[in-house]
Length: 497
Ligand SMILES: Cc1cc2nc3c(=O)[nH]c(=O)nc-3n(C[C@H](O)[C@H](O)[C@H](O)COP(=O)(O)OP(=O)(O)OC[C@H]3O[C@@H](n4cnc5c(N)ncnc54)[C@H](O)[C@@H]3O)c2cc1C
Image 1: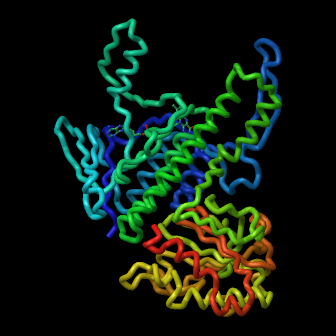
Image 2: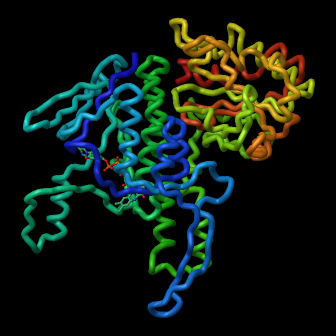
Image 3: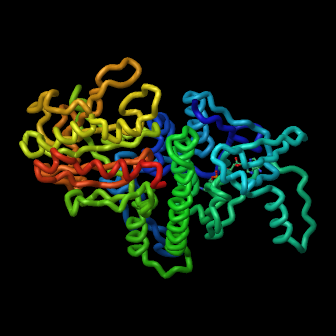
């Protein structure tokens, strides 16, 4: 059964006018992984170029430079502009399509508390939420809550203090938003790991770089799959500690970045147009949302055995993407589009050039292991006769001319019987190869991998790399005990959380 969620919102209906509109490349990638990237791209303006101007003489400005808005190679998705209300609407529609999830409007949360004793029992509902709806008090009990904390009364109080030499009365408030341009983050992002803060509730900064809505959405993206996994009983509640660990670090990075970026923009800073332009371009990867790096934790391994075999693959960061070609129908697609946000982990075998005997042997050994009873795919697949790939999906990305390979040279673990119709799923076999109409993606080169070698990348449900293993083992060793054995066990075994 899917976890039951309640989304409470004080407003009487959906947002009609938001303040934010800058949508980072990373946010577009995430929307794509939920199957709503095309809608977002269709609706939004795509920012392709930035032009720099400076004052030439009083009242006259001149152009000092131009740059691509997103430097080539950062992301296959553009930076978009779409009002926050329309971004919200896309998400609301997707929620409805997915499981008929709705928002309950008109609930003003007045009080929220956690019973710390009860919080120790994973099956308890220790969070009490007291709301006011149509003048009545309505109370909810929850296992977990994701919250924001600012109240209108706080804001009115602050306004009165600032204007204390005047009498200020508030007769009506049509629209408001608390957006203190202070550079702060909350001391604590949780209470008893049952109530979690996200967005402006736990990090505030200037709106200069257009980060707040994006980071807020990514806070939700980080905790979403974890909460679902815990509530479905797939992982123990301690998984939620990694939300605090990871997003607190992201918030600190954001505030440090905002200090730097605000100073760059500040009229008092003695920055030349050239220095400004250089600083702006250097910040581009950050503002595109592509630099978040999570520290070691039970779900970010410090195993990086590649020793330079995959130089552009950093454990704890999003997996960079380039075009690959699907083996079964020659369709060119971005690797990232295969990594859907459906709660599954991925084991991506970068098997190299599999016309080479050594790589073919390694691939066969890995395939045998993945189908064996020790396979993490089998051991961690939820019970009840579910598909073998329902929690860990294997994906093969080979290098070279796909037409030199026949399907029977690929282990069946990469096209297992699964899905509604219980047929072989051929969509998991990809090649870094020339496509018919869209040239070559050069993924191996982009990731810093050699086709002579092979490696395995474990990707979390949020497209972040959990670990990288080299599979360049001696042939015999590989056949007898493939090293991949260690990693999913390490990642997913319950007692390690
Ligand atoms: C001028 C300006 C421009 C900006 N531009 C950008 C941009 O281009 N890109 C970008 O990424 N960010 C931008 N931001 C920042 C962005 O708007 C915020 O960071 C983002 O909206 C934060 O999202 P949130 O969900 O944390 O809070 P909010 O968007 O404020 O949402 C909180 C929700 O909780 C509801 N709520 C509050 N209290 C209660 C309660 N007691 N009970 C029930 N419901 C409650 C509110 O009604 C609201 O719907 C900008 C901000 C400003 C001020």
